[in-house]
Structures are given as C-alpha cells and as structure tokens.
Image (cartoon, rainbow, N blue to C red; front, side):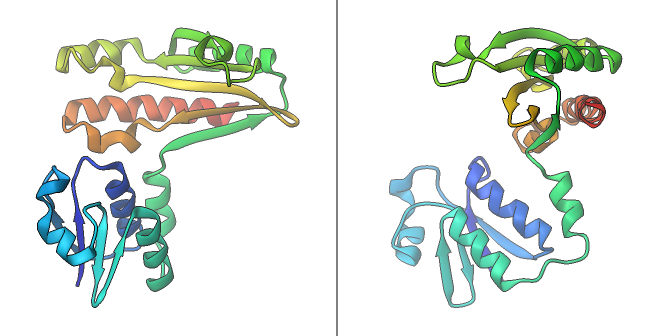
Length: 210
C-alpha cells in the first residue's frame, strides 16, 4: 500500500496527488503537523521534516520531484491518464503569428465576443524590470461572475478574475493563463467552483480561436 505523508495546503503535495490520480493509484494519506518541529514521526521515518514523503513498500521517497519520478517509473499510466492530465492542467496556452500589438487587439476582440471583460491591462515594464517590453498582462473575467463571487465571499472576487499574459515569441506572440479550476483545491465553495468553470470554458474558447 502506498502511503503519502502530506498536508493539504502544500502545493508540492498537491502535485504528487495529481500524478497519483493520473496514474489511477490507491493510496493512504497521513497528514503531518503544520509545524516542522512537531513532525517527530516523519523525521524518524525519513530523516527529514519535509513533505511530501511517499512510502512505497520498503522504499521511502521525499520531495515532490523525486516522488513523481518514482511514481512514473514504477507504475504504468492507465488509458484515461491523458484525460486526468488535461482536467488537472494548471494553465492554458496558445500561439499566433501576429505581432504583439495585433495580438493584443485580436485578444480583446475575442474576449469581448465571449462575454469576458478586461478589468485591467498592464505593460510588463510596469510590473517588473526583468520583463520584456513586448509583454502585457490583462486581468479578465465575467462581470456577472465577479459580482456573484463577491456575494459568496467578499474577500475572494479574485477567484474569478484571471490574468492573461500576452508576450512576444519567435515567429509571433503567445498567450498564457492559469486555469482557475486547477486552483479548485484552494476554494471549497461549490458555487464559487462553478463560476471558476464558467470562466475557464470561456477562456478556453478564446484561446482556441486565437
């Protein structure tokens, strides 16, 4: 039996659980204390106080990258692994031969056509000195969804406001946006999750048409 020592809020543990789901593995989770100094059992088992830590028979593997590499090398991927991979993706991306300015204009047209509003647009140079000139970040969302999200939790309207990056690449421009449903484990509210899915569906349609 596979045993995963973890904490639910840890993104590295989430990465491991994602791969275990993709591989169709059955496992037991053991939630360790939040404070590292209180993880005596974990320390005795692994010699470290960090998670994730996977126990696979007599073998113990620590660290998300090592655990994921062990899982992929040890267990064959089932037929529906690609479906899990797509459903759990953390971002969407698309490319176009258009230049930066034309790509921004085309993106705005597509967003409006799919009921998505641009809440803000910021040039890369205004965000950080290390970003190139041909880099723009747009905050987009469905206005009605943002209003509903505020009614659900006034502290979390950002759950349905999505950053979309437009930046120059060889041969044109690229778009990238985090997948709000990929963050679903951060938000436990069913109604909020439905709003996130609505935004994702519209953003996916925009990226497909870009």
